[in-house]
Each structure stands twice: as C-alpha cells, then as structure tokens.
Amino acid sequence: MLADRRILLIIGGGIAAYKSLDLIRRLRERGAAVTPVLTRAGGEFVTPLSVAALAGAKCHRDLFDLTDETEMGHIELSRAADLVVVAPATADLMAKMAAGLATDLASTLLMATDKRVLIAPAMNLRMWLHPATQRNVATLRGDGILFAGPGEGEMACGEFGPGRMAEPLEIVAAIEAAFGGGPLAGRHVVVTSGPTHEPIDPVRYIANRSSGAQGAALARGLRDLGAWVTFVTGPAAVPPPAGVEVVRVETADEMLRAVRAALPADALVCAAAVADWRVAKAGTAKIKKDRKGAVPALDLVENPDILAQVAQMAEGRPALVVGFAAETDDVVAHAEAKRRRKGCDWIVANDVRPATGIMGGSENAVTLITAEGREDWPRLSKDEVGRRLARRIAEALGAAG
Ligand code: C5P
Image (cartoon, rainbow, N blue to C red; front, top):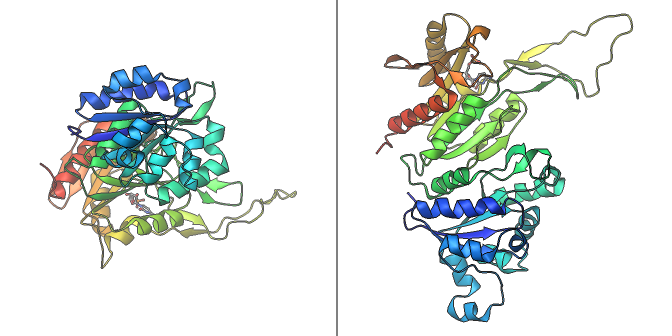
C-alpha cells in the first residue's frame, strides 16, 4: 500500500528516536521512499550515518546547507514528499509547530510544506500532560495535523503513563490510513466507546464497568481498512488507538454533542456503554454526610439516547448505524427488539453475565443482528471481532474490493 509513496521523516530528539530506525525499515519494506531529516537534538540519540544507511538516502540536517539550497532547497524538500511524518515529535517540536516557528530545518520544513503532516509524540508523561503541551495538541489537531499515539506504558525514564511513542507498526498503520488505500478510504466512521461518567457532585460520579476495549479494537479495524475514524470516548481503561481522531468526553450529553459535531459520516457505531441516567441536579459542592445519618436521595433523569437520536435523524443520517446490546438474559430477543425500537440497522449483541468474563475481558462472543436475520459468531478476541465488524461495515458501505 505504501509502494512509491515518498515520506519525509523528521526525527526529533528523544530516546524514542531509536524506534524511528525500525520505522524507516518498516516503511521501506512496504515500498516507501524515506527522506530523513534529523534535528540537532535527534542527532544526540541516533547517528546520521545509521539513519542514512537505513533510509538509503541522504540524512538532511542543516537549514543553511548551501549545496542543498542550490540542489534542493527547504521548500522543495518539504513538498517533494507525499506525507511528512515527525517521529518522535518532542514537546519542543510540537510547541514550535503550534506557534509557527521556523528556527531550524525541521520546523522550517513543517511551516513550508503543503502536504499532510502526521506526528508521533514522545515525551515524559508530565511533559505530555502539561497544559502547554495539551494546548499545543488542541491547536495542532485544529490545524489538521494527524496524530499517531502517544501510547501508555513504561517509559525510558522509569515512569508509567501517556507519552510513550506509538510502536513503529502502529505508526505505519496510521501512515497507511493517511494515504487511505484500504476499502474504506475516503469514508468517515464515527465510533463511540467506553463508559460515561455522570457527576453526582464535583468528586463523585455514576459509572459502569465498560473498559472501552471493544470500541478501541473496532476503531483500529476501521482505521486499518483506510477509514477516517472519529473516536468519541468516555473515560476508558484502555488507551485510544493511534491514527484516529480522538474526542474525549465524560458525560452522555457531551458524547451526544461530540457525535453530532463529528457528522456527517458514512457510518456511526455506538460501542459506548452510555449511562442510562444522570443525576438531575449534580451538586456544585461536595455533598456532606449528614451527622444524623440521613442519606441523600439522588433524583435521576434519563440521558439522551445517542444511537436512537442519530438513527432517527430525518436528514443527514449516516448510511449505516450500528448499536451494541450488552444483555444478561434473552440476549437475541432483547437485541432484536432494541434494533427496531432505536431504528438502527444492526445490533451487535453480547452476553455480559459476569460468568462470561466479557465485560472488561479480552474476548467477546457476539451475535450480529440485521434486518436480514442473525449470525452467531464464535468466541473471538475483541481485536478479531473488531476486524470482522470493520470488514462487514466496508461491505455494507459497498466499499469492499
Ligand atoms: O438501551 P441500551 O443502553 O441497551 O442500548 C445500547 C446501545 O445504545 C449501545 O449501542 C449504546 O452505545 C447505545 N446507547 C446510546 N446512548 C444511550 C444509551 C445507549 O448511544 N443513552
């Protein structure tokens, strides 16, 4: 899928730069041509020689390299590529990009390019979570910059959390999706995932046990078929996949707004476990324990049904609307009734009785219910369920091939 694609790879200064060597190898294996640019800080972690040797191309380093300016200036370098990839993208590089600085070769290329830019952030988790970085992330997303990761995990500095560079193969998948070569190329799919948190007061909330694993697996499957995926996620236990547009929400109301804002789409898949009720009037201050032992009464109101609302839209309804039904009894009968009631096209039904280990586990056994009938799938990993469902969605949208 990447044959003859030209990728300008900017390697920033971070310990994750060593993974970029593997990234070059993986890209070239797939037929891509890689033009590497190594920042000054990047050169502290990997050598220009190893970068050039793996890329089979000159490793560019300086803005004021006269030979390059006569042969191929920075403007041409930034435009000769089909895609610009920054891996690792450090907090510093991202800040430069967000501010529009052009102080070295890498930042100048990023300012001068007319191509899409995909970045794979990598930094210490405090730096990632720092408000300045988060502001820059929002700015860059708004500018249309694509993101691969970061993931969560143990870091070279010994801390654990978000900020770890996506693995080379995940970056490759995000690059392939950016080129959109799969059967879902050019298609937009919105996926909701994870639980919602409905506040009781500023410190307490109503939640459920959804891990977000099935929604994340489905988003990966869709992404790998080339779809542009908007992933609207509540506070999930598993991190969102790389290479999708992530919109984080907390409540059902926020999720509905995010889904509406993400439309139009070719398909909507509601894999989120949305809380059915919220507290009518969430306290603005922490509810105090009554000394006499009286317990507060929580007045609940129904949350909007995102799936039903979009499925019943008079205008702009996605061609395919898919819901999930987590049931503990009479799974198929309840799910079929739900499909009709909500007006969606398909329901993916699963049995979430605790004994099945499905809720929060890594496997799922689903029944796909459509207008044509039911299909019982064997017990599979959630990843495989995600891949199969993505293929079915591609077929339904007439995009297979
Ligand atoms: O009615 P129930 O919650 O069982 O329906 C499950 C399906 O409806 C899931 O696809 C879920 O994502 C969706 N849903 C929703 N908004 C709600 C409740 C459920 O989108 N408020």
